[in-house]
Length: 129
Image 1 (tube, helix red, strand yellow):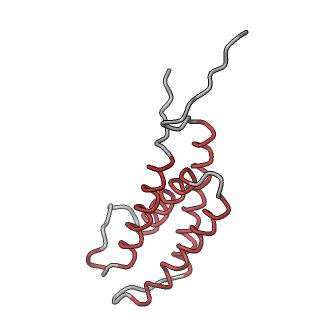
Image 2 (image 1 turned 90 degrees about the vertical axis):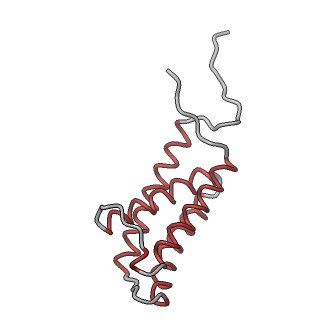
């Protein structure tokens, strides 16, 4: 059985920053332009940050403390910045939901990093000698 292979670190870094930019744009755009998935807004917040957290965790495997700080800081900053966007309002509860999603995504990224080989990197095999 073949296991899926993680993308290269460079691709994961591009993906992580792109996802964060998309989440920021959706968070700060006028409410009528905000994309909707059909899920509750709390589930959308949680899942969006879980994706961001997982991507950053995989993209920066040796900087997990910095990744956690970035996730928590981004969740808080986006809620504060919503007060500058017309028709938007940030709430502590929303920041907590985003932070929780980011942390769970980070944990999932750690698990994936330990279980799956990375693309473009040599994988070792165990052989009997």
